[in-house]
Length: 239
Ligand code: DX5
Ligand code: ZN
Image (cartoon, protein in one colour):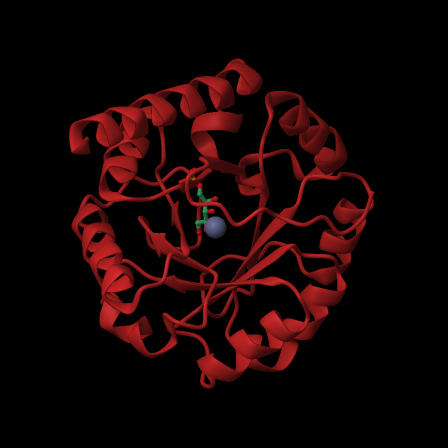
């Protein structure tokens, strides 16, 4: 197994189940289950008890997981010191490293470090942060992640305001002639995913809706089918 790469194709729907809602004592088995379901990515929520009021895991767990699965790891850093520690997550085998605009003093530098290592660089915005905060790095990033809950916990309710923010982000990307992957994280289920797909998101993190389902494999497949149907409708409406 080991470090895997991701195809940056915004025409494809990417599903990134969040391991925050998985059984931490059985991460390899949960990853295997997600492989069976056809997950494109595995979302790893790194929390430091400082930037967010919760603690999860760090580079050693990511490295161990990377050795157990060939699904690319989508690492979401909810930490105050990404400026100093980002290299450790790269070395641990992340395929994507996303950092919060609110948490990085030298956001541009951190993004360059990720990209120079050949890893996909993402920037994340909290629900209360406007897209103007990332305008000066929009040409540098491969991915933008919009938080649709306040980060820290799984199973929270989707904040609907992010739908408009996603439309605005798409407009900003068009104006700059860039096409980053637009990922959404928090409260994503079949209903909210459809709203976000219509607004232009193509990568969907989902924790509670998948791992909390009676049949997580079937739920992931349903989620993808529902999103793909909404995206196909959108394309035919434009034609
Ligand atoms: C929240 C995390 C999310 C979370 C999503 O801080 O960044 O990735 O696990 O979980 P659900 O889908 O349950 O909202
Ligand atoms: Zn996350």
